[in-house]
Image 1: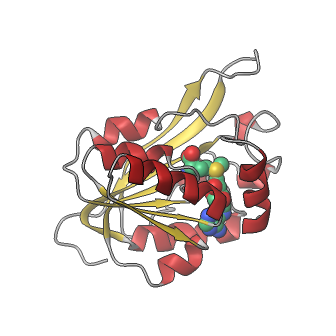
Image 2: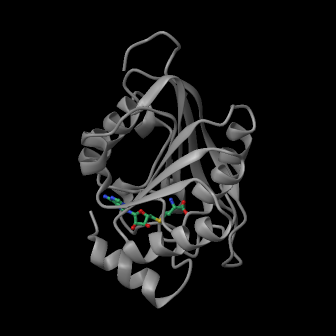
Image 3: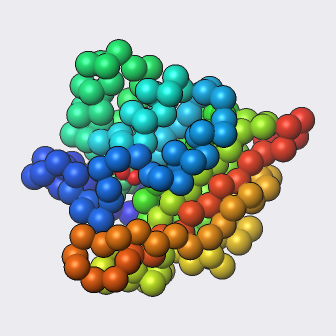
Length: 203
Ligand SMILES: C[S@@+](CC[C@H](N)C(=O)[O-])C[C@H]1O[C@@H](n2cnc3c(N)ncnc32)[C@H](O)[C@@H]1O
């Protein structure tokens, strides 16, 4: 996976360096959060925190983890300005998840590790979902290769690549989503997944 230093450089050069990502919260996360009571959320690879800030404004207590201290300092500054309950953790999500407690909502938004690493990290992210809690995933679809996301087919998502990717969780939604592109071309394609851990089950 790319090192924190590389991400730091990209964030230091410009705000919102990942141009394909909209500035506001993910629209499917907005839809999911609208159905849930506020609780504890974990935003993996939170970046500058568009999703963390959205959840915290709804009353969620958010832990935001990212390799980039530059991105998280922007998030922390905005959270402090608005007096929001956001804790920032600079570090690798794999290391964080190894010792993580359980969360009511785990957010995986536009993270694109290599497939073996992805399987391991998604299993760890799933294990961090509390009974009754949810995991949310959004990422670039393989059909957007060359237009959005990393230029490696294997790192992009298909519906099939996420089938069975959330051990112990029940998949509630797994679908393609189109979003307008800023490059004048046709719409970009994403994959969105929601999964939940049944109440009363053990992580
Ligand atoms: C494309 S950005 C997405 C940011 C945010 N989740 C969003 O949707 O706007 C990917 C982020 O993941 C972070 N990242 C990538 N690999 C990571 C890892 N192994 N551990 C922690 N953060 C990571 C990067 O620093 C970057 O901020």
